[in-house]
Image 1: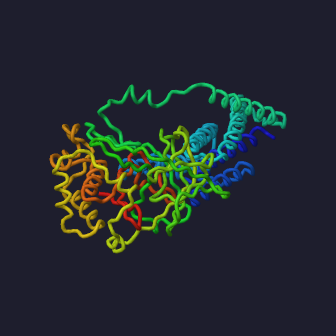
Image 2 (image 1 turned 45 degrees about the horizontal axis):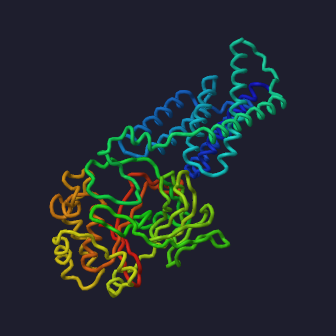
Image 3 (image 1 turned 90 degrees about the vertical axis):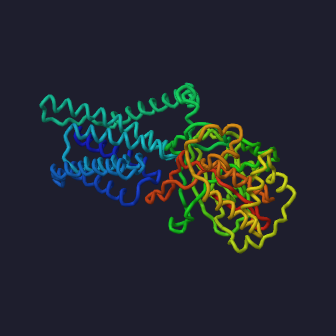
Amino acid sequence: MKVSQALSLFTHLIALIGFFTICVSGQVGVLGITIFLSSLFLSYINERYRKQYYLDQRFVTLLAFALLLYAFLSIVVFGKDAFNVILTFLIYTQVIKLLGRKDMRDYIQIFILSFFHFLAGTILTVDFSYVLAFVVYVSVALWAIIVLSMRKESIEASSNDDPRVVTPLFLSSTVIISFGIFAFTALMFVSIPRLKSGFLTSAFIRPEALKTGFSNEVKLGQVGEIKLDSSPVMRVKILNSDPESLPETIYWRGIALDHFDGTTWRASDTDYKMYKSDPEGVIRVKENGGRVLVQEIVTEPLDTDVIFAGSLPVGFKGIAGGRLAEFNDSYVLPVKLSYRLKYTAYSDLSNPRPRDLRQEKNKYPALIKRHYLQLPPMDERISELAREITKLDSNPYDQAVSVKRYLVTNMGYTRTLPPGTGEFPLEDFLFESKAGHCEYFATAMVMLLREVGIPARIVNGFVGGEWNEYGNFFLVRESNAHSWVEVYFPESGWVIFDP
């Protein structure tokens, strides 16, 4: 094979592999895949058979300018997710480079763009196919760099010769070298210790600058400004439903907390219940109530053992070891998530009708009353307020609606926590500042309901996310962390209320 032919082949291969690592993540839609592969094929035909199906250079310049303008407006003006916009920019910049005439500088730019595609794949992909792509990418990249150097030297020497130096021996020897590099890199990765983010956090972030995020407990009364963090925490791909049929708001449930001491919510000591996977590999934790949402969830390392799922989880699949523990309807792994985790969750989206909830009696099991009617010592005004809000209601559902309405109407949402809320944060929220974030609203609703004998609890997790219509998934960020309320009904079970 001549050097020029080898350069063309390896250039298009490395562009294809870089793009493949993005495709397997589901981040690119059918249209994007079609455009890229068509451009790649046309570019290779042009070089292999010396065709002239190139874009005019002026048109290439115009397209590049349009891409830059798109990226700028999307991020700065419309506030779209920067990662997705930059990824789109990189993909279509590669398309433009492939469709234009190429000199040595263009080949180098195609290599660089493919490398950025590959890095994006590292962020997006957890499939085993990425490991295979890594090995192939390293091999092809090594071939491409060597051949590019040879071609460059030939051009600089003003030689018209195009020697046949790319032999099977050359290819096989570089493959062996590539595997050696891969093995050495893997060995270094697992053997050299790496710094944990906790060191950097404690060293460089001031304690009063709180950051939103999921936690296994909720503590009120911390003074400071809550900083929104846009770091991704998980990607939730919907496998069995159109976006139009999804609920307007989706809650990614984490952990339910039942014990409040006046400042801090925790899960009280309770017996764990262990669940094992069935012969189909599914861990069934509850009976399916009707409408089931199937989700493929990929989580970043969150320093928690909690497993997330939409609304009310009824089953999980793909959990390593096939075991989960349950307490308070929260599901946990044997160890904390110090690595990316990919699994399938099944959730019941059935919502009982208000008229059915109004007919339910307020007769609760002893276990429910023991855990979910607990009250800490509090200001008597809270009990008086609860009775005043619900005095016209004849059933628990309407009482819950009245409490929610009162909080939404009379309290304001703020991320800047006022001073002086350390010792009695709930009392200060209800009677003094009348402003707080979701944890204050949820805490107030639970305490007011418990004061009138209605079992309730606070839930920590995430809400919503950025919908990606091409990949059919939600991108959930730290800033989507949220606390809400679940109210118990004897026949319907736990029902979500979000004040």
